[in-house]
Image (tube, rainbow, N blue to C red; front, side):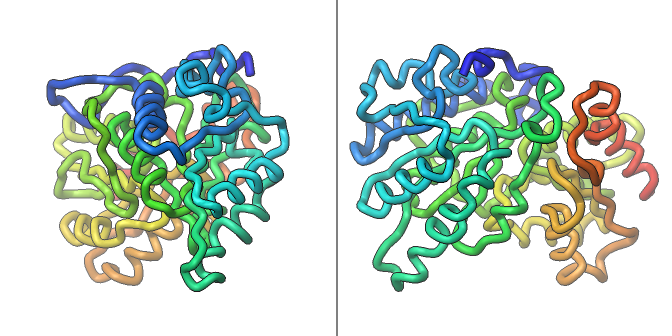
Length: 344
C-alpha cells in the first residue's frame, strides 16, 4: 500500500507522558520491536495482513520483518477481510499465535461475523477447551481528508462484545507492552492504533515486557477536575491540563489504556477526589466509550459529583473530508480548556 509510507500528519515528536531520561523509540518503532520480539520468542507467532511486507510496512511498523523471518511467518494477504480473519482465527484455534493487521478499522465490520461470533465466543461455547489467541491490529485517525469511510473510530462496537479485549495504547511504552501482552495472553485482542501517534517518542525498554489490559494510568495528578481519555486524546488532555495549570486550575489526566476491560476503580477514585469529570473520546457520544465512563461514575460515584459530567466526542454525523469541516468535527485542546472552565 503506497500511502502507508506517508508520515502521520501532525503527530509531533514530543512525549508529554514522561519527562524521564532513557531509551526512546517512536510509537511505530516500539510496535515493530514488539512484533520482532514476539516472533523471536515464540515460533507459533506469525504475522498476516494487507501490505505488511511492502516498502511502506504498515506505516513503518512491520519494516524488515518479512526479510528477517521469511514470508512463511510474515505474510501479505488479499483484500478479503472476513476470509482472512477466519483464516487467522482457525490458525489460532489450532494453537498458533497469529497477529492479523487490518490497515483501517473502517473495514473491520466486514469481519464482524468472525470477530463477534467466533473470536469472542469459542472459549465460552466450548467450556474453556478451545481458545482463540488472535491479536488484531487496526488503525484509526484522520489524515489527508480521508472522510467518512477512512476516518472512523469503532472501538465501541467491539468493546460491547464480551470475550473480546479492546486496547488503545497512547504511548510507545504501552504500544509495545500491550502488543506483547495480547500475543502472550491467549485472549482474542483488538489493538487500535491512532495514526497520529506513530511519530511520537517515548521511553521503551529494550527487553520484552508486558502491559496488561484493564489497568489505566494517571498521567498527571490534579485536584479540581478529572480528564479521562485514551489513545491520542490523552496527549490533548495533557496539553489542556498544562494550559489550565497556567491559569491556576488543577486537572488530573487519566489514560484508560483499554476499553474492555475498563479500569473502573481508577476512574471512581479520581472522581471522588476531584468531584468533576470531562471525558474525551475518539468516537461518537451515543452508546460510546464516553457514555460508558459517564454511566460508571453515575452508578458508583454520583454523590461525589459537584457538577454535570461533560463529554467531548465526534460530531454526530459521518466524518467530513473538507479541512474546515474537519476542524469543527474533531474536538481539540481548546475545547477541553473551554469545557473545564465552564464547569468551574
